[in-house]
Structure formats: structure tokens, C-alpha cells
Length: 306
Image (tube, rainbow, N blue to C red):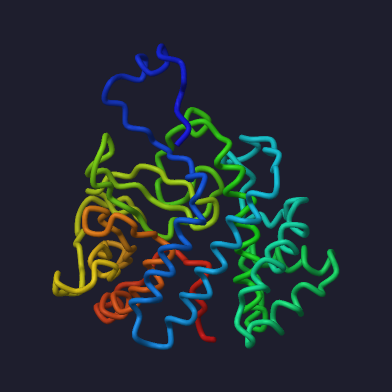
């Protein structure tokens, strides 16, 4: 996390300062890769193959991010600090980043994925950027669904690199806590820290730029209601492998708006990742969905209907 180096600034904030916003870690993709690999190893169904592939993708994201220097775009040009993702404006770096990512993943991807990667890599720049714009605005077609995984991953690299360059004070607190104050993307879930100055605090997690921002645990992060909140979970034997995602994964449901969003208690699983663990705990979605609650917050790697 970027924090002020000036002691006077730290004193001004106070000894018990709670940061509203946390920048993504420099190795966020590497950490996610390890987590995907752990979850894949613990998965008994064929879903493990997809989790393992995403582990390779996250490792490729880290490798590509390390090879580029991303110039921070003008900030505070609209309702968000960084360019708002949903507006569909494709960064100038996108095509080069996508090409590098596909090349990096292509050396590790299974045979059945190679044709998909090759087809995407063969797209002319204009076509690839048009696809990226549709992905950002949520207007891609069902036929493009598989390609969106790789496009989203390339876009994540860029927005995450931008967010990592921001100082804490560059992202002022906002009243609305559902969407990322940096890029405007809806939170995929949240984490509750287990130790340190942030112990017990909930931070929402952005699936696009990997920022985190503070939100009161007593309120629904979707409708801001303070009533009707409940925690739902699947009972699990604590003796199972500690990598099991259900040790940390909970669902915060709201009887006011009838939505739910996942929460991960890091005291139960310190390496839980809101994107990776989400994909490894879909049984929790089934349980809560059967209760009549609608999922809030999209995971860019959760392919529906495919």
C-alpha cells in the first residue's frame, strides 16, 4: 500500500487512521496465481482444470506487467479517479499488452485452448480494440464469451498498474461503497482483515483494478441498508485441508434488496483471494440462490451459460 513518507502527514492523520482506500499489491497477480494453483489442487471435479488455467493466466499477467511501464492517465476527469472502465475507452497500451499476454499464456496453455488464443492473437488492432470496448461496456456477444477472459485479463494489467501508482490521498472517501472509487467497477466481494491495524475491518475488492476500499460491515454494500443483513455459509469440517475455500467464504445476504455478495474472513484463510476463492466456492452461490437472493458483483472469469 502507498502511504505518506512524511511523518507530519502521518501525525496529521492520527495514530488510529483507517485508510479508506488500499492500492493493489505489486505482486497481486503472482499471489493470485499461487492461490489458483492451491485451489485447483484441492478441487476434485473437472473444474480444477479451469482453476489451474487461471493460475497460469495470473502468472502470465504478473510477467507481462513487469515488462511494461504504464504512464498514469489524467485523474479525476469524471466520477472516478482513474478512467471509468464502463465507458469503454480502450487504453493505448491494450493491444501490445494483449499480444504479450497471449504469447506468455500460449507457452503454458493446454492444447484445447491454443486455437482460441491463436484466433484472438490474429485479430487486427482495430478489431481487438473494438472487442475490448465491448467487454468494458458489457456488450460483448455470447459467441465472444470465451475471448473475454483473455481481454479482461489484459485490461486488468493496465488498470491495476495505474491504481498501484496512486497515493492513498488521491482517492478520497465517497458515500457510495458498491463501486470502485478508482475505476467505477462493482465490487466482486470483500475481505475482512485478520491482523494489524486493519484487523476486523471490511474492504471491498475491485475485480478490474484490484483496489480495495473500506465499507462498514453493518451495512449492505449494495443498498446501504443497515437492517436485514445476515451471514450465510456452508458448514464444513475444520479438519479438511486448510486450502479449502469454504473455510473463509461467507455470503452477506440482505433481506431489503434480496442480494448477496461474498465476504472472505482472512483469519480463516489468510491467502483467500476474492476472485480465485469465488470461483472455487460456487456451491455457496447455489445455496444462497436457492434462498431467493440474487448475486451482486461480477467475476470477470466466471463464464455463464457456456
